[in-house]
Image (cartoon, rainbow, N blue to C red):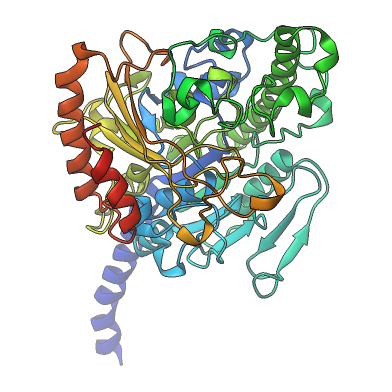
Length: 533
């Protein structure tokens, strides 16, 4: 027996050494916290320096950015909640992951990001907004809103509290506070603290209708929020696809701040018609729209402040990658538009800040063009893995380490599918480079069963469940000369060669990215017919 004991002692020592080494490796691997708001425009921050920066809305986020890395050119690939979230989870564009619009469900077996991080030994969790319909079963833990969730007294579906979708728990309070409380609770109570963790911490705010915490009622009440010039005047913007011939469709295209849109405008919503002339009505509606929105943003930033303090107080600051972004941008009155969906800058630009004291260049601003399909590959590689081939996005790990990348993309592709649904925006796709933007409005719904042909007035009683075709046209913007996209230069001969080059690149990108509409021959026909128009 004595000899056998002596024989096993070295084996036990080796086992103990390897176990300690494994734990040490795990402890050194970065934790990852992915923070996402809903519809937070980069304009509504200090760090991005837009017209609202001087209001000091986001001091905690700005401080994070000062010691992290700020991406100047981060874009969404489909500016609407569900498709954007699907691209973030899958690393794929919409036609590949199958989530084109708000109603498509992401298949359970395509919850790739948590699956890949689980393989790397991470404990995974999501708290807050999910909005991908099916149970987020691939996470070790979830506590997510049913659908959009509510601003006040939110309900969650929680793993371990019954069977989906009946596993409902209820809370009192404002959703931004409640989500933050629950994110910190999970960090306190997670089961295996020796493992690195991946936490998706998702706010509902500042999604419309901007139901802010009442404690912010007086915030900005005595301030006049800066107004965009294009709210009132933009004679050269758009095309027949977005305005109609001789402006015949301007009362039906795109929810507006002013009374322009006949069915959804914020003069009517906020009842400001009594304020005098149309400009005064519009200004009053804009001020109400922006102040409600910014109060929601302020509530998020205050919660980020206490969350960051929690991380520092609990020794989680130095070895944790913190990503801050939104699922897309937001139109804040530019072009007299509300909501998102458009391929205009304010809609497609996503704030993106990455903070990791041990592993990235601090205080660096980068202008490489990235998009939301890049997030999953990046996080997987930052966790020590290899981005799988089925992901279409590119890892930003080299950018995070060096502040630049070799052989990076020159363009980002965008596609909005939900033709004339909710906010009356025509379907379109396009390409955005650092200097230019090319957009093709094909003006048809992808589901022929929902398409109508009787009337352009798609919201009337006789055609309430149909959406009608809209005009087909191209738009082109020179972002260096015209960063506010006030003049469509598509017909300007000065840009002929640039447009021809971008069309070739757009066609190539659509083929590479599986975006050629093989399932939709009626769309292919329109695209082929009008490509050279």
